[in-house]
Image (cartoon, rainbow, N blue to C red; front, side):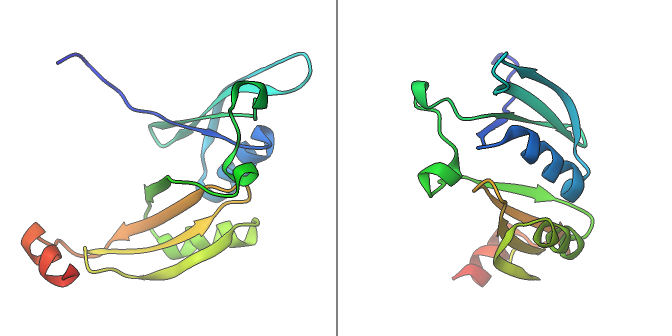
Length: 141
């Protein structure tokens, strides 16, 4: 098998604003951005403590539209943090909308979910207990 690295690449209606939101809420650091003469950002990368999230503005002429524009998303970005309650509170204060308040989950994590101002769903959690796969299945059922 060859080396493979998977990157999430999201389209947003305003990449500059998304970078600012992710920096404020998650402490993410902008790595770089490529901007067209018109001002539209064609590609940007943000570092989440060693993991890169790629972003771009909308390119409707190529069928690239944001979750906010289409009014839906089939993807949830899941981020492990030290304290999900703190991060979710920051996100809400920065303009996100809550989808699931933080709560202890059957799979050994405390987590909650919000939709960022750009239409993307985030599940943010932190570890609270080790749970075997069999025990997870038992609790799930």
